Figure 1 (cartoon, rainbow, N blue to C red):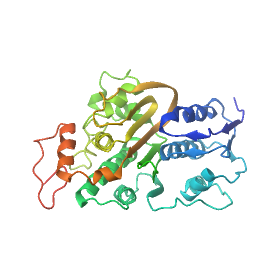
Figure 2 (figure 1 turned 135 degrees about the vertical axis):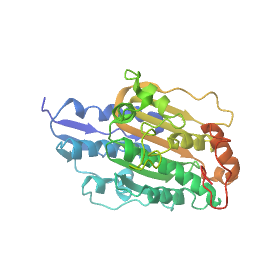
Figure 3 (figure 1 turned 90 degrees about the vertical axis):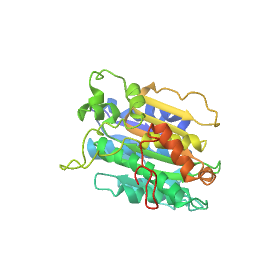
Figure 4 (figure 1 turned 120 degrees about the vertical axis):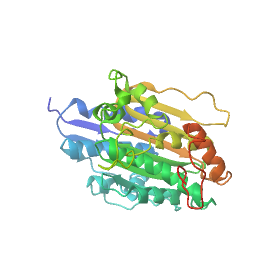
Amino acid sequence: MNEHTLLILPARVDAGNMEQLYKVLSVPDANSGPIYISFNEMVFYTPNAITALLAQLARWKDIENRKFIPIPVRYNPVVAYIKYMGFFEKLGIEVKGSVAKTGNERYMPISEIQKDTKVDKVANDLVEAAMHGHSSNDEIRRLLSYAVGELLKNVQQHSCGTGYIMAQYFSNGLFQIGIADNGIGIKQSYISSFSPRAKGKEEWTDAQWIDEAIKCQSSSKVHLTSSANGEGPVNRGVGLTMCRLLAKECLGHFQMVSYSGELAHEFKAMDSPVEPMAKTIKHPYHGVSLSIAFNPGALGQITFMDLRRQVLTELGMLGKVPPLTDNGTMFSS
């Protein structure tokens, strides 16, 4: 088929109804003709919705070379907001009209994540936005920066696609982070890298692979080395585990989607029930999408050493890591 597709985006998308967006995004893949897209119905989009949308539009435009035709964009608050955050610029779309500033400095505009991106700088920029106006010691900032940096390395090393990250503080007290890519997904990353963890599990569902990926040190490439000299694993496979724990400690949320698998957890209270397993969703997302939210104020109420102990316990590493020195990091002295 070579029919054109009219893509009308849903009005409101947040972590609770992302599948509504995935349903709309699945429509163009049924045709191979031009994609006409309307942004004019957008009313409210959170960072994970914006990055997931951007990653898929970039897939059609840059990877599949589909003809991409935006319907003339009318001014509305969301269009102005995403223009200010760099959304249209990343797609090479010119949108006339003013932009809507966020009204405070607690945000991070969209950054593109490719193989040569300096992820440490991106992670540090996000932490500075998250902790703006909040007191916390340098070690807490380093811990948060490390966790976010690990997620961005996942995009670089595993996705085989382009990723995007942005973040925004909301009036309910949560700082929300959205990360999405248009790559091969978690399952294929394990299989294509010949991870020992994939042996005998080729028929696992995307949901099962999400449950595997969330485990401590279960990276699809943790068995590889970062250089010919064998200087250690590409990454430690702890970024997802750490970020979910941070969301739990700060009463936020964690949501992860990879193709037809989804893991979602709202941490409403410290005595949250047993963490859920990933489930299968009806409309797959072509890549990986992450939504992480936490209360920055909560990070100032606990010490780094307490949080470090909690993280290492969750990761199964307590007692296996040397004590910190003055120059120590979370995992080494």
